[in-house]
Amino acid sequence: MRRLFIWFLFFGVVSLESNERQKEDSICVIFVCDKNDTVRFRHTYEQLRRYGRYQGDVCLIATGGLCAKDVPFFSGKNCHVVSFDQIELPSIIFKTAIKPRAIEAQIQKFHIFQAYFKEWDFLLYLDCGMQIHKNIDVILQGRKKGAYLAPGDLNIKGHIPAKIACQFKDLGDGSYQKILNEFDMTKLFPRSGIALYDSSIIQEDSVDTLVTLLNTYPYGWGDQGYIALYVIFLNPVWEPLVREDKNGYYYDFCPRTDKEVYVMHKYHCLPLKCPKCSAGSARLKF
Image 1 (cartoon, helix red, strand yellow):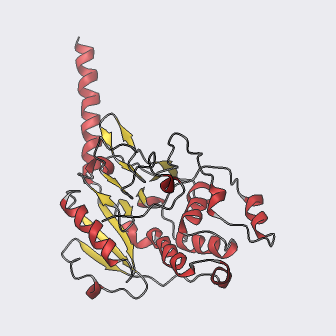
Image 2 (cartoon, rainbow, N blue to C red):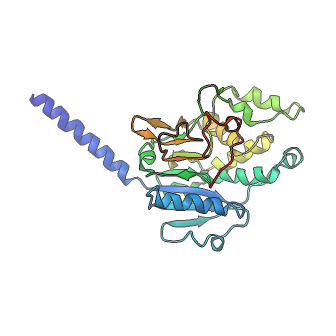
Image 3 (cartoon, rainbow, N blue to C red):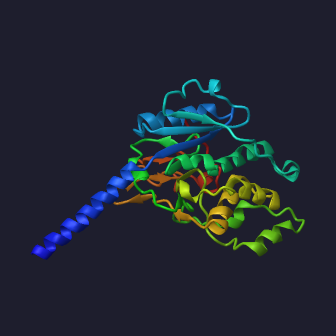
């Protein structure tokens, strides 16, 4: 009985110390926004504070000429506006992409790997337009040392899991074969709308590496494929973000049930009932 008590006391203290260390972690929520996305940014930011019950640091990476005066609602001691050099698109994308300006806005997301963010222990990136309904602490508590946590594929019945190859297009000039030869493009990949990660995974050349990938393989559909290449192959730190457990639903691209309230999700539609969502063409509804 005494041994059992000592065992319980020891591991209880270890558990308490672990929880205490986690509570002491500094955290920052990051958004990337340009002048075309301020409405969606405000929507998610206000939900983060009100429903997400988050009072900590929030950093807005302002791109495309956006500045602090364009977002007057975003102010206070825990609000930070930063900007970095604009990442330029390779010229071939302007010739081959349907909406090159949209891709140009998306690749500014590479800046979430700036060394500047090592000022905090952990970072939570959220897309502008994310729907937040409940306290986000349950998501933050899942943070893991040395990991980049982001959701994988939808993994719903009747949906074939997408491989990373789908994030790049074949221009018919032989260049697509190069990426197939250098990476295993049959792997599943992380979605980039949300990511919870340890700032220690950020390296001094992380952004430069992402830009190099962009220029070497200039036929991605957006930021997602390049970030996936980086966190799967070049800096292998990706692990799937927990979507749900016995305690509830945390995050999904779209709700998979209308019987439970998610902590957050990207779109409102139910993928099991919305074929457009499965095809990636869901639309956000405020």
